[in-house]
Structure formats: C-alpha cells, structure tokens
Figure: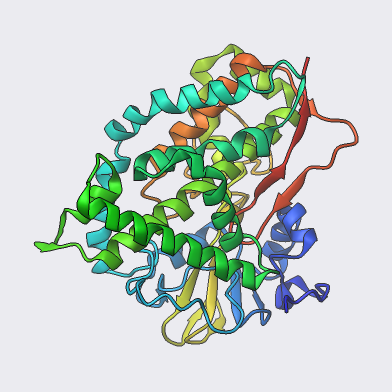
Length: 400
C-alpha cells in the first residue's frame, strides 16, 4: 500500500508524492536548503533528497559510490516485474560504465543536431495539425490535447513503430512513471511495453526499416552483434525517457505562458528570444528527478548513507538554488548565465537533449503562431503529476 501518512518533518520524513510537494515543491526546497540541505526519509526504503546545486552535481559525478543500476524514484512494491529478457535493464540510463559508455555511443547519432533537424518538419506539421483541431473552439486542454500528443508521436517515428498506438504508449509510460498507487497497473504496463517491443524486434529481423530499432538490431557493439535484450532495453528507454519528460516540459512552459501573458507576448513577437527562453523554461520547470543507488557506505555532507540506500537526483531543486542562480524563482526569458542541469550532469546527461529542445521550441512556436493570447480557464483546475516526472496533466485554457 502507498504510504499516505502526512509529512510531519520534511527533513526526516519527506514524501515526493505528497500533494503539497507535487503542487509546490519550490517552497519545500527553500525550507530544506536552510534547515537540512540533504533530507532523508524511510518511506519506500531509506532515501536521501539533496536540494542544492553543488550537492546534486557532486553526486551526479560520483559514479563510484552512486550507481545508476536503479533509477526509479518510486519503487515497485514487493518483487519487481519479472522480465528476464531485460538482462541489461534500460541502458544507457540504468547502466554504469563500461556498458553505459558503449550503449550511449550507439544511440547518440540518432539524437545529434543533424538528425534532430531532420525530425523538425514532421514535428512542426504535427503541432499545426493538433492546433487545427481546437483553435476555432476558443478552449483546449493544453496538456492533454497538445503537449502530451507531441513527443510520443515523434518517438514513434524514430523507433519506426505505429503512430496510431500513441495512446497506448502514453498509457504505458504514465503507468510506469506516475501511478505509484496502482502497483498492478504499473506491472501490467511494464509487461505490455516489453511484449510489444519483443514483437517489433522479431519483425525487424525479417524486414528491417530506416529506424532506430532496425539499426540497433542489425548493428554491432564492441565488434559483436547486438543482443536482443540490449535492443529491447534501449527501445524501452527511448520510449519511457523521451515521452513523459518532454511533454511535461512543454506543458509546464505553456502553463507559464498562460499565467504570464507578458512572456507569451514577448515570444510571440520576437522569435529570436526563443533560444534563451527555452533554456530558462527548462531551468525553472525542470521535470525530471532520477534515483541513484548507494553502492557502499559513505558519508556525504555529514549524512551517513548506507549501501542500498537511494539518493534522488533532485535536478529541479538544483535549478532553483539561489547560490547558483540569481532570482531563481523568477523566469527571466533572456537569462544569459544559465548552467542549468535540467538534462542532468555527468556521464548520464540526457542523450536526447537536442530532441527535447527542438520539440519544446517547435511546440511553443506553433502554439503562439495561432494562439498568442491565452489564459487558464476561470474556475478550472490544473492538475500536476509528480514523483519521477513533474508536469501538468490537465491544463484547461481559453483564448479569443
């Protein structure tokens, strides 16, 4: 059963699924930085939560004591899903060197600047079609009708899987990352995702295509054919990591623009402001928290971390640290000095960052081109998901 006890002390009993934290983690981080910069909880196992930029970056770079073998923030209760075909997890994100290094090298070409540029035309056309569906109605759910429809279809294109399965993919990813109170649903989603990709891999063995799955399956790793289990793990990673994260960033950006019309006006009227604005929106609304596993007893910032403990790589909190950013709670669209860690830090920095930036930019550009003036619908509720990935799940907006 999910632990639903109220939080009595955030320093010693934090809960990233508490509604207070999901709705407003920023206040919690501010409180902890002054009282206990590395908080602890025994909910769901012994877990640590750093809140400063320096600590998060230092932890991310210490791969000797903090392993990526288990990156899930909210663990499965009881035994994890039994999927022996996933012998290597979902590398490179869940792997340490040397497997991390070799598998990351395999996928990087598919997310290079040049390759991502080739995805932009289809992404822009997709965004335009989505806006077409509601622009005349004067209202939309900017999260469910728009943001959540974009990355899943782009990732399907890259993997060479049916775009019409977008809703199914979305359900699987949300269940695995978000639905901590439905363990059976998480298991079923994980098993459904794995089964689907097993079938797709068998198809590619007979009929390869111009897609990432086919290239992995017919490629080599360190001079040897790539094992099916590795292909399966990488495919699962690309879907899981490339969908919820990016639509959360797009949705959070649209929430910001709906509640800060002056910023929407700036971006609608000055396209050259977009590159810096994207980096600032990524900093301010970083969606992703990752976990690391403590491999051996170690003291970090006075905290006695034990082997088997988890550390939550709190990149969103790092990006709001006043020691690292001036006025961190203010969104400054032209912020020039912006060494944010929205995509992580160290060897596990997100391999798909170029793709995420492109999708964010195009999604915001196409929205503002057609809907430059919009706001949250009066009386409507904006709902947020939290835990591993934070972002709006429902964002009702109205526009002229």
